[in-house]
Length: 383
Image (cartoon, one colour):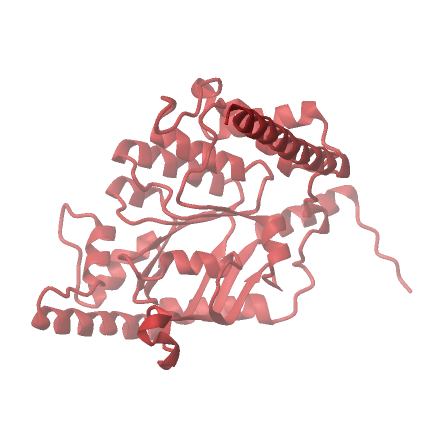
């Protein structure tokens, strides 16, 4: 038997190839949920169960080094798609989601992905640095030294542009602190402490002005170009944000009306007879054209027919056919070169840290009980 020996340079090149070919593929993903029938005292328990299709036959592929935006009007299924990818869905999901030729599970998501939710949930009295240090001590492995934690926190602070506010309080509704855009950066920085390969963001620019939103997306684009998969939902993108994106996916009523590179967006819809007017943001225009106008029955009928035309045209387009072919080839066919790196797995905090947290929690409960008894006895003696 011949033994093949690889040199150190060959091993490094091989590892680099594995890192450069990370993909997230969705194949014929559909998502169905139960509709709320109303309160039980109004006879809801006697009515038949109704189901609503939130997503239908979604096929797309995301690659490392690219930032992709999910667009669509309210209720189009953007957040639901993120929930399906991150294994947070509560309904019935059909189809497959693959990460590097492996079907996505909760364990893979925990090891390789971070999900940044829309709401900022931060402690207002802590500074930005204290918030990141506190989170890092909870999230990073228990054998991580304090110097390594401080170095990791400083790296994340520099990546997200938080150097000038690192020692400022986060603040909240009552306590004055950093701005809304900086709070979003802190929320994203928390998820970057574990150095994920894939970052999912739900409406990261919601509530921000155009200048702050552009700088936030610019930071996300720089992060993606360093070898990460970045997928974010955007409700009202500006033309400046459009220039920062690599790929765009437009959802209409749970189906894709377009998914491809930003350079293909305008030519594709122009071939369908809908060129983008001059001096108009293509993202705003095509999201509006893909939406249903329910203000008038005639408008609703016209816009519904146009929406169905967009969906059928995209399914039959060369862009979609090539996307399906590539995603199917990369996920369903066996491959020897692609694998999940087992060394990427991030373990939770150590046993001593968990025990310390539990003891502090139990101690706080005991102190509350003691003070409650003292106040109760004092109240009884005064009666």
